[in-house]
Structures are given as C-alpha cells and as structure tokens.
Length: 276
Ligand code: SAM
Image (cartoon, rainbow, N blue to C red; front, side):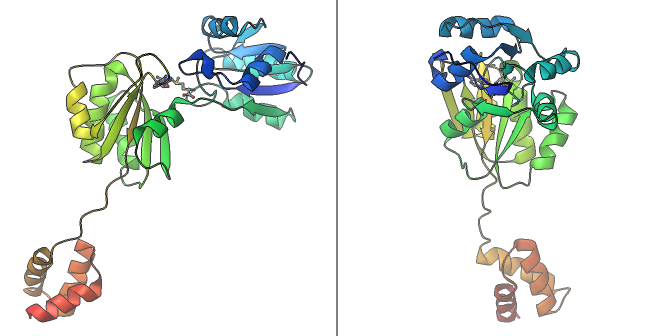
C-alpha cells in the first residue's frame, strides 16, 4: 500500500531491535508521508532501506529542534509529516513532545502508529509487578543529583523503570541499592536483538554482578516496589511496651508502640494490659 496520507503529524514507533518488529501500519505511514522527521538520518535510512521505502528526511533532534520545528509545523498544514526516533517510540526519552503540543495547539491533526518501547518491553520481561510503575528515563549521571532523584521516589509503592548505559550500570545499581534498600530488580539488555539477556536478583546482587563488568549494549533497569514489612513478632511488641510503660501509662504506651511498629492500637493495648 502506498496511500497518500492526509496532512498532519504522524508519530511512528520503530523497532528497538529486530527490524521485523515494525508493524505494517507503521511502515505504511512512513511510505505515505511526504517527509519524515528523523533523529539521525543514517539510522532511519537503514530502516527505510529494509522496508524498501524512499522518502525525504529532515533531521529533528535536541540540537536543532527550536530552529526546525516552525518549518515542520508549517509543512503539516498541507503535508503529512511522520516523526520517528532512532528506535522505539518517539517522545519516550526522545524528542517530540513540543512538536506534538504545538501541532495540537495549531489545530493540526496528530495521530500515531503505536509500537515498541524499551521501557514496556523490559517490564514485560522482568517478572516484577506491572500494575503500578513509574518510568524515570535516564537519571542524572552525577552522584548527588542521581541520589536526590532516587530519594524522591524511594517511598513509592511502584515498580521503577530506568534507562542506563553499560559503563554507568554498576554505579547506578549501587546507588539504587543504597537509596532504595533490599528490592528485587532486573537488568534487561539488548531486547529483541541477538544477545537479549535478562539478569534478575536483589539490587545488591546485581550491583555486585556488574560492579567490575560493565555490559555492552542497550539496557533497561526494572526495580520492584518496596516489599511489605514483615509484621512484628509478639516479643518485639512486648519489649517495646515494657520500655514505654516505664515512662507512660499503659494506654499511652500502647498508642506509641502501635504507631512505631505499625500494629493496631487495640492489639498493643491488650498486650500492654497483659504485661501490666
Ligand atoms: N524511545 C525509545 C523507546 O521507546 O524505548 C528510547 C530512546 S532512549 C534515547 C534509548 C535508551 O532506551 C537506551 O539507552 C536503552 O536504555 C533503552 N533501549 C533502547 N533499545 C533497547 C533495547 N533493544 N534493549 C534494551 N534497552 C533499550
């Protein structure tokens, strides 16, 4: 099919590994576009050659976006402009959100051929809870800024998804372990490519594994949510109550211990009366 597309912006997801992951509809959008806005024309040229598509490309990346965006928006009024990134879904740790926002504000139709994204693919491979997740993209490489970003999300009951490079993986896993504590995690590498690999374990185990062995290729880190704390044992509650009752009445001691150990007030009070 080579149907001409109506004018507008077409956000087209492309493979993150195997080129045959390209959907037929996504390929049709590229084939039918008047022009394709690309991050790196050398990368997209390979995909177009694989698909047997010849369309003009305009580079659109973080260094020229401010200059090129007005031209792309002007073209969208009369032409179909497709937007791709080097791999995966545009706008996800890739350029494009201002283009979409401004196209929408200008009343230009915006649509998408959805497809691969490393974050979602890694989540499906990791075997960690997927009901609630937070995508963090690339965190800052400087230690202090990275730790501040991690502290901000440490208390969230959500699986975390991060992009990272091989040389920085060990330091990132060590920082995750220090800031988030004992959690299950997965390092997912080279998804949909020949050397696809998944390593799972606690953050401490993974930090140890990659400390002196930075892996090659593209990487997503998935970190499970904080575990439920084991409920305190009776002896722990009793010990805390005995100490608190040297200072407080039974009812106040029970309230303090209930709060500190996260047990129901009634249970703490009953134990306090039994110990009295
Ligand atoms: N827009 C892309 C997407 O939807 O996944 C992400 C672009 S971001 C600039 C590139 C990062 O995505 C890589 O550094 C890596 O962390 C991750 N990534 C991309 N392809 C991957 C793959 N095949 N396997 C693992 N991670 C990948």
